[in-house]
Figure 1 (cartoon, one colour):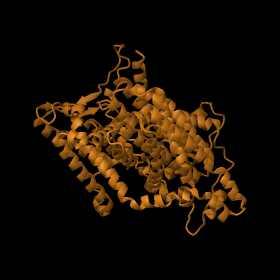
Figure 2 (cartoon, rainbow, N blue to C red):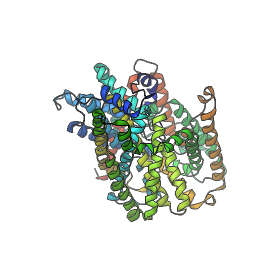
Figure 3 (cartoon, rainbow, N blue to C red):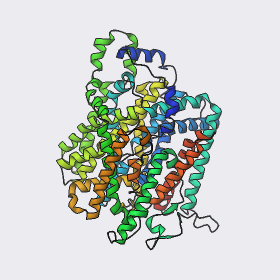
Length: 633
């Protein structure tokens, strides 16, 4: 369940007005590509340089830690297209200023950095916080290190290679918007056009990162041996009692952490107020009622969520699947267009003739031979890991790879048209399919769906970055190489950090790392394996209510007049509140509230840099503290 895949919604009304793609109306595919090659392609600017790739991989490795940390806390996968643009520009400017770079980075080098950073920071972590974490909770032990490393790399690699045949059809010919890609391209343009404004944003990011890091440093009591060191409490408890118990027992506290506040600033007000409403409903109304009737025996986050996750999970899964189904036109276009994405050889002979520019265009696109080689190698690798490490039948593993291609096409088209990647829905389709194929095999259920979710995320991320490059005039083959290399940098960091942050299974699903995505995936897998008979009667009622509410909200959001839709809660936000502690929903709402106020001022442009800085600073210090603790420091 990755429910937030883009940070660009704050910018859409600005950036879409400046869209400078090719108008495809009335033009043949050859004419469209000729226009781009002649008018937009910037062949003379440096792009895939060693410094751009190394800096992008380094930046992405850092961002992968932040996304893992935030994902284990909230279940959100924060898309980082815009964040990576700002960070790559800032890093280049800082290194140039201190003399480590002898020249400024070109805009295409920054775009290359963005691709590598985005791949490392986002593509490698989607299954880590969902299927892999769910399997850890269920099995009670970690899989071997090299198994997880191979799995993470292979799934992400499969995703980037699956995107190859989609790129020319969806980006070059159909000109799908991929709004985050447009926003990222326009962000880079504005940063290069307005040096002073970019410098101020860089300072905001640096100050925010220092604030976030200092907060984590003092909260974790890193210098406990020093008597004069300030120690910040982890929680600030509110006075008062509910149903005879203090409010902290119901998770009603304020966590002294900036990460969730910053995440709320990025997520936006609609989802945030929906989460707060869901938190109030769950922790202040429903849970006290069922506690007083003896349905749950104890309080605290783990005891409460063991019951409440069923209603929340049902709401989110139903909403995700129904929203996906209501986008049937997008689904149909994806299915109908599957054949077109493989027809480029025919197009060359029938439509292109001997035009030298079109031949040169073929020379900068990613060749189909790369797609076939990557699909074969990564597909065989994934099936091998499934067979030997997860005891999944080879044909089930092969089927999961085949399903992943078609579901990735649908997910990428949804991303291109709406800026929302339905990773959760894609994973649930595979889970439901394997619930029929192998009804009692929880491992197969999770790790086949993990292929779909992870590869779909990786494909959509690459196409979003390729859209940015397309608008900036980048060489797509060079951009693909940067994206591919970023996978290895991200995996090299995120896999050991996962073992570091979750050394034992009991940490996941607890107060520090609620791991809501893992809880949802685990719940669906167990429900498909064990059936409804394993649930308490009240949980079955919650499940039914969650299904009904999820269906109703999805239908209304799609079919109701716009004046009504603006007042509807977010189904994902409402459901997620039943899976994470109340203090998280409170912090996220406060962050969104602060951002909505700041957005009306002249410093609106500092929201994303400051929020990104807080998340990066605090999560990195949190990982370092865990590292020192593991080392016995």
